[in-house]
Length: 166
Length: 417
Ligand code: SF4
Image 1 (cartoon, rainbow over the protein chains, first blue to last red):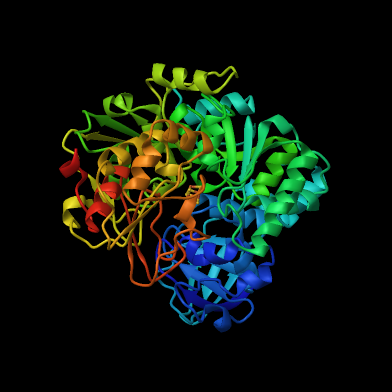
Image 2 (cartoon, rainbow over the protein chains, first blue to last red):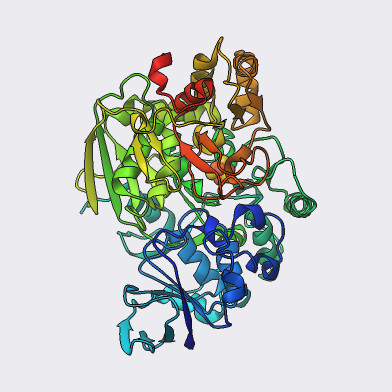
């Protein structure tokens, strides 16, 4: 799976309240609607700036805070192709795999706002096209790759009726 | 090689001899969802083409986050939960029953040695009674509802040894804030925490819940304690089920061991806008406060209301300030009424709202205005958390909040006890 797009850069500890505020998330299950408010408290213009396929890039502990699955779903529906960070909070991490949003863990110090990136998930490399450098990415464990490749946990359960990692 | 509490519980529940970093599929003893997460889980449940939940007696859904409903959209989501709960015959707690993390242990659903998931990040609360409980998202919840199982990466453990006795006027909330400030918001990411030592042994089970509740604020997957005599008695009072308490082995291997002497600890405050932005109260004493909040799954228990009432007794909430109080459950509220605590709080000028999450998460009840400072007993102070991203949230103990609203300034509660 090849992903290509531009970078929207954030700092450390972006919590799920920033990704999608509790003000909005309880109102509806319409994720297209919720997507309009993604990152609103950090950057009110964020949704209108995204070009389909862009990346969210951040520092440590991205997605900390609440267990709201609206966070990855709203990111997906804002047409972000993947989130790239130095590390992720655990529940957010699971939620991304379950909903089919690719996560890339790597050193993000050499990625800046507006950079153009190309990511090859199979090969495990990230090309920073703007800077002409390659960055190695940490591979996902087999269980998560299985769920992602089935298209998320809903599809996995539809296929097997329960967990099946054999 | 010995095992940690997390390794033992996940071994017991997966039927395999597991150690840290193994990935296992394990059997769940209990599964919980609240009104912010259950509607999506119900949708996933239907999409997964399931007909029945694995075991209705092992499942609860709770309406606590927006309760009673403030908006049509929310009312519709609540309706879907009620329909699902009736159709599947699961345990269901409607508006006013309380916060999920109070209800699940209080109603006797979980206990020592259990493996529990909840679609809410503070599900780690039940670690205080030796339960491996952890927060998940809605799709994991749906998978749990259907199969009674979930996959887990067995976490390594960070052990906190807390020596000494907490001084008067310093509470478990101050202790956990101090620890979070020390290890930071991601200091325990992917890890389980174990809390042990004299300071923990001295605490009531209620006060211990506050500590396990906030394990997630350092990134931890679970916040575990061993079951001592107090735990076993507490659990017996609340549940008829049989449990299998789990102790860590003496030669268990830890990712890190942190040891503290708590005997000189002072009241602590988490300053805006992160929970690990912690300082001793004296560093921010005198900061003007427009709103105080006592409640939430962190500090809305009967002991918390007793402490607050003891400070508010015969006093008035300052005219430049206001106080909102939410008991963590109907039972807690009833008990507080019997003890006359509600009368004290209301005579002081406090406002009681529905038992539940109260103003914690900005969905209703007590949204601050631009530029206002709030002092709350909750577990999060993120920008916008209470519904206004131009407000400032400080976190402290129930005693600190009570003392602060009397002066409309952040106040050391030890002046009042
Ligand atoms: S009280 Fe606050 S932190 Fe606790 S479950 Fe409710 S919203 Fe979450």
